[in-house]
Image (cartoon, rainbow, N blue to C red; front, side):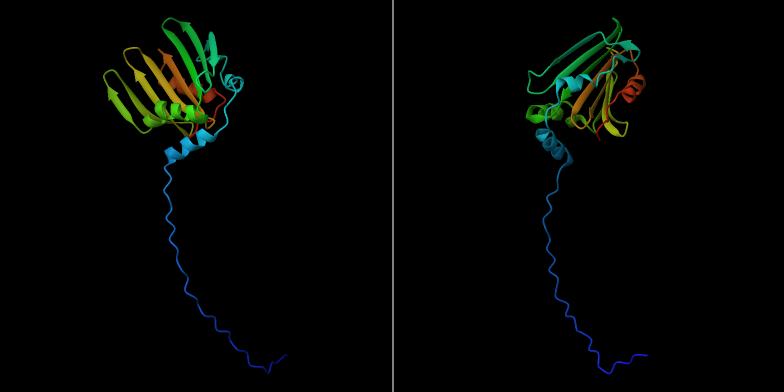
Length: 181
């Protein structure tokens, strides 16, 4: 047994006032943040964009293909034509860089969250593979269009004439792309 003869003094800890500093946290708009990310993102090569295109879409073989980067962003286009009344057209835009970010904002971002419906068709924001997409339908032309951002910077616009929206969505699921939120 050990016994201590010394008095133990409890140390008195003085609680110093803690200064609470309120930092003015600048609220970052997610839309503006996405534009900033795109402006800083490296451009995607046209060859890499081309690899994202399937050879067959909605059971139709690719019949025409083109690509360009004349507008300070890459653009790849493919047509899948079954006949004059049934086709799918896929256009991809690289939204990296200043001009690509502007295209993204005007062609996609500004319509997110909006909905419109008339006898001539509709436009609505939908969830597609965990990300956001814009679905449009032109009743007069019988064209359904899906627009979405994939791989964080490639804007896809897929238009199908006489092809239902659900069929286009199924085709998107088969593509090797990750839809951004």
